[in-house]
Image (cartoon, rainbow over all chains, first blue to last red; front, side, top):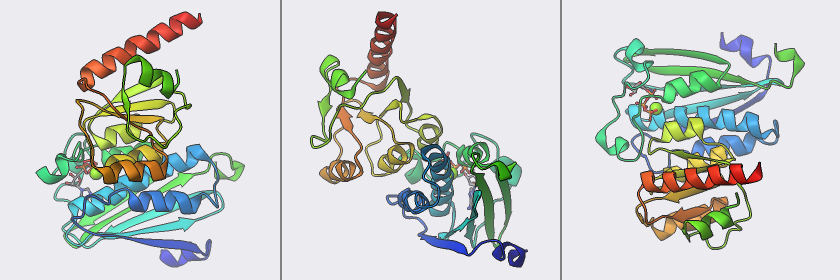
Length: 153
Length: 117
Ligand SMILES: Nc1ncnc2c1ncn2[C@@H]1O[C@H](COP(=O)(O)OP(=O)(O)OP(=O)(O)O)[C@@H](O)[C@H]1O
Ligand SMILES: [Mg+2]
C-alpha cells in the first residue's frame, strides 16, 4: 500500500512527538502549518490542517507510552497526514470516537485537554479519516483537500 | 469593534504591550477546553479562557484568534507573554470571571450591531 503512495509524491516530512510532554503540544502543528504555507498559501486551508495536526499531536503526547511520529505527505491537491505510535492502543475504538469520552489523565485535563472531542474535530475538518488500533499501536490517517483545485472532486 | 476599543470599554489590561491593537473582531468564544476552542475560534474571534499555559498560544495561533482574554486576573508567567508577543497573539487580562467578561462583551457587540443599523 505504501508503495503505491510513494510514486505519487516525493514530498514527505516527518515530525516526532515526545510522549507525556504536554507543554510543547501545538509546536509540531505550528511547524507543519508554517512549512505547508510554501505549498498552499491559503489561510483557511492551513487553519483546517492546523486543527487536525494539533489534535493528532495532542493524542500522541497524551495517550501513548513513547510518543509517536507525524508524517506529512504533500500532493498537488491535498495533504495526507499519518500519525503513528507503538501503544498502548485504544481499548474500545467505538467509545474513543464518541464525543465526550476521554481517558486523559488529570494532569492533561487541568490544561484543557480531555474533552473527548479531538478525534471528532479531525473527522469534521478533514476530508478523509481512517484509524486503526491494537495493543501494538495506533495509526491515524487523514487528508485535507485543497478545495480550490478542481481535480479534487 | 477593535481590540483597542475593547480594552478601553471593559476595561482590560493589555499584557502584550508590544503588539498593535488595531485588529478587529465580531464574535467571542468562551471555553477552557482546547479542542472546543480549536473547533470554534476564528480570526474574527476573541477567546475567553482561564487557561494560562503555553498550549493556548498554539491554539490561538493556529486559528489566528484576534486576541485571548484571560479572566479572573489570572496572570500568566512572563515567558508566556513574551512567546505570545513573538507569535503576534494579543493577550488581555480581565478582572471579571469568564461569565461576566462574556456577558459584557455580548452586550457591547450587540450595541455595536444596533448602532450600525
Ligand atoms: N494515539 C492514541 N493511542 C491510544 N489511545 C488514544 C489515542 N488517541 C486517542 N486515544 C483514545 O481515544 C480517546 C478520545 O480521543 P480524542 O482525541 O477524541 O479525545 P481526548 O484526547 O480524550 O480529549 P481532547 O482531544 O478533546 O482533548 C482518548 O481519550 C483515548 O482514550
Ligand atoms: Mg485528543
